[in-house]
Amino acid sequence: MVTVCHDLCGERPKLASIVYGPVPSWRLGRSLGIDLLPGRGKTCCFDCVYCQLGVTTNPTVERAEFVKLDDLARELAAVKGVPADYATFSGTGEPTLASNLGEAIELARAILGLPVAVLTNSALMPREDVRRELSKADVVVAKLDAPDERLFRLINRPVFDVSLRDIVDGIRHFRSQWSGRLALQMMFLRGNRGAARDMARVAKELAPDEVQVNTPLRPCAVAPLSAEEIVAIRGSFAGLNVHTAYEAMRPAVTPLDVSETLRRRPSEAPPDC
Ligand code: SF4
Image (cartoon, rainbow, N blue to C red; front, side, top):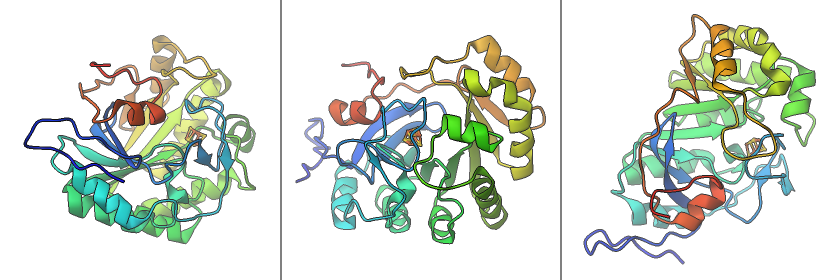
């Protein structure tokens, strides 16, 4: 059951579990999160070593309907008018596993009147249906953390049989057919910091609108690289539009429901909590 927003009386709206935030995003400003896999635990086709959500409790590569569009519509209507820059599909797992992602994107745009972003781990980019649904978004942030199969398996630990080559080909295909804003997000750790030049070579081939050079600044099982190390890595990406996690500014935002937000962003400490 969703409790509606009390715009006029000034009470803070109580959200159910699909919509959360807004959260401050160094890439998207004030980001109103939409989680199409909101069951407890994490539903993903990767088990990244740096994942802030912990281990993948629901490993799967099967697309399914985890959330009904009627329920999503009700929650979106309840938060219409909340100040945000983007409606962002992310949350407790990989959003492209939701088989109604394309319809959900259209619904979010229609109800909220906001541009829509999707954060994806890129694992299902080889699938034509997934690329078609992602193309409905205004911004797609696609994860790419490795330049070769060995590092891919070491860092992203896919839970199914997929090759990095197929994923990169899928992103290339997507880029060639879609004119929206494509960002590559590259997470740098001890294990792949020496591969920055190779990562930059792959990035140049894919011609993204921007590259987000990240390192796990939120608490997780892996230590982040230092600001100096990230600056050095940035140098390998000359000629590309690069943003790094250390340089980025985050807007001040207050989540509508702190507990639902912390479930997706455990280290997010909103100013009033
Ligand atoms: S793809 Fe995202 S949600 Fe899945 S394990 Fe990696 S970091 Fe976590």
